Length: 142
Length: 374
Image (cartoon, rainbow over all chains, first blue to last red; front, side):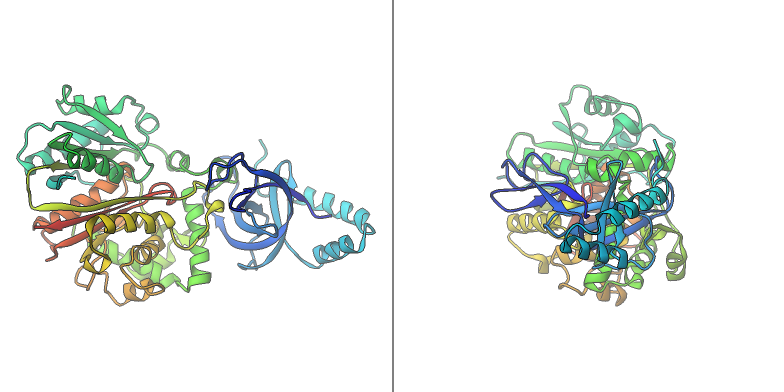
């Protein structure tokens, strides 16, 4: 299943931010919590060749426009072939969010999700494999 | 509101400097006071972005005032990240315009080259939203995100953003105070190593030491402050309503032009914040100096070169003059004043109206200053 991302919405201007904030950045108004599906469109991305301390080079960062409206910062394992406007899925690993291209597997996953819960088991296996591969590839532990 | 005049302007050579930061700032201030023919100001406004971390000194307004021999002159410090110099100029302007002080010394400086580059990046990066920093976002990283979007959505190409570096290095080569004094070729820029894709090393400004100062007076002088304006935006890049233009620049320009009572068509040359060369292209359009979508083309056409229709960054800009953070906003104004008063040999323009544009953080706190010669 698609990851749920904690976000918040401004009841006055409708701004949605993720992660959630107490006050809207544009108005001194308390935001209301909501969950957004972890899928969206790449707004921009970059690969850092001299990342700051605590990260390994090259480090890929992306801004992703989530389906619910918030723009979201995340890591990616790979920027090769990535384009602005590409559809990506977002997953959390140890509280850090990563995007992956929404490939055939993800599309199948989305289809299964729409169709019901038949795909959940396959999905869970895929996710744990993916997580094991990604872990340690882009972020230095500790 | 009283008219405010820039009576003096001075700065140190920018680059790797062995002197203490306070001494660099005192040297710039002495030059500005000498040009103004004043021995002692009524007030000192100090700009320093992070002297606590960069050089380990706090209580910095008193520290600088004392190093200048002005321990009894009131001094205060202003900070808006990388635009602190321009913000301090505004604070000094406001004091004179309000009639609170007759002669205000505004001095800014930063010293960073003694620290390793990753440490400097980390310290500058603290002006970025904390959540984005958790993902490894540095200034070049966020600028890389802006630049990729600029290329994809607004058709800016690598040649255009690289030519800004070629042009500004050519200007810096004529400025004896610039950090970089050697011209570079388009091939040099486009072959330099990747920093934050699509930004290469030579699309980025250097890490520099230096200081700059101006003297503002209520008495008439050669250059009048026509307008000054501040514009702001969200700290987090992900919260912005636009990624390929900066609201903070647009609002600062609107405010400055409103105060001046004229529009961008009157501006004859500009010093803009080219910390990353694509930012010069964004600034030209945000400031209204160039129609939307044309900044790259006018740059390649030579319109923004010293001998062009609208010279931009005659000093060499942040790219070649260098970027000692809190000194930069004032160094831009110093260049404008020197140009307006015939003090820029080797790169002298014959112009009467100047614009200076300074970016704080990743364009969360920007300033536009308009200067006019009598």
